[in-house]
Length: 212
Image (cartoon, rainbow, N blue to C red; front, side):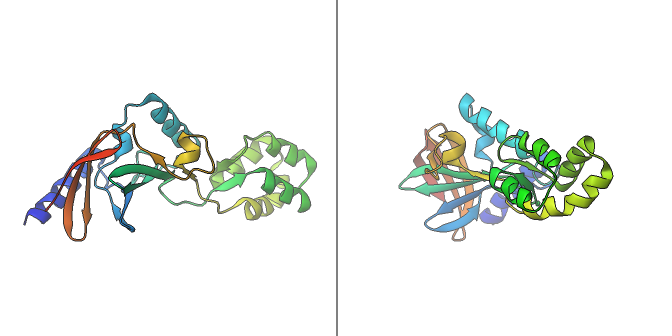
């Protein structure tokens, strides 16, 4: 009965706040990945972390009623410490990426130089939804030209997901996958091995935990 009440209460809180049930963050514990019932990044006060998260959301947010916060985070509990592994665009929609590698491939596919020059002006690693990329090109070129080459551009630039490791996002270190969340203090709620778990975190370290 306690278990049913615990889960129902958390889902009720989330539903009341957002209207639509929201996609959860994930947490990895002892090799298993489970849902978090709260959103730790929404509680963070650290200005650097908030700025980096806001920047990710501005670049990659896709309107989605199931994810109003604009991202989905993956966390990990390890040796009584909390780590952030990555964040990603949470609606798992296909995006199209204008990277240096993709631009080189487009050149080999015979995309006109005038179109390539406009694409080269786009920020490195910029991504678009399909309609955003189409609108971008239609504003620059005649629709007949866009219609001819857009399928090739879609094919070359598609499918890379909008996600970034915590190391790259917060520490600007591409070789570092995860970051110790020493800027987070709060409470984590999740279900693990049929137990409802409550972990109290202070500056990234577990200071108390209960399961029932």
